[in-house]
Amino acid sequence: MSAFSDHLETVQDRISRAELRAGRAPQSTQLVAVTKGHPPERVREAIEAGLTVFGENRVQELLAKSAALPSSVSWHLIGHLQSNKIRKVLPVCSLIHSVDSVELAQDVDRIAAELGLFPQILLQVNVSGEPSKFGFKPDSLISNLSTLLELKRASVIGMMTMAPLSENPESARPVFRNLRGFRDRCEAESGTPLPVLSMGMTGDFEVAIEEGATHVRIGSALFV
Ligand SMILES: *Cc1c(COP(=O)(O)O)cnc(C)c1O
Image (cartoon, rainbow, N blue to C red):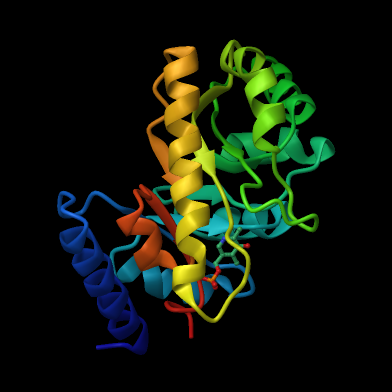
């Protein structure tokens, strides 16, 4: 067995145990394998081990790898998106996790119409209030919610957040719990389902699953 499949098995086992602890259905968590900084050959190994969903935080790297690898795999953009890159990324990206402003969402919507696409997007929320982080402030998202949910082409299907870096995964728990609660409130106020919660990375994905993550974005634990 390759080193990659060893790491994958460990990660999948940890995901399964977190699902079990949380009383969740087995395999209710989508693993997004974060390939940033790793060459296409490493991603190929991951594809051979059975993975199909990959995340990149930079558009340029996403474009290069998606062009080098089979079109049967899905690419998610998980990092900040600049408006001038939307046109390039939309055709090759199946989910944007990191829509962090109304203007960006509107630009995605407009360009999607020009390209004849119907992209799915997540709203990145800065739950922890760290000034260095991208993302909507919850209050600002609430005031813009109807605008965001009424976009014609771009469908908002959920939310994403990043917890502050910490040695202790438990310190992320309140952040994840807050995102879930905030999502529940947005669903109740809008009457629109927002089923996807993208939260949890190598350092805190088990806590995120216990708090309701549907998508975990894992890099280092897989590509050591
Ligand atoms: C790099 C990155 C990850 C994965 O981080 P690891 O700690 O390596 O698992 C997840 N989400 C985002 C937005 C990232 O940029």
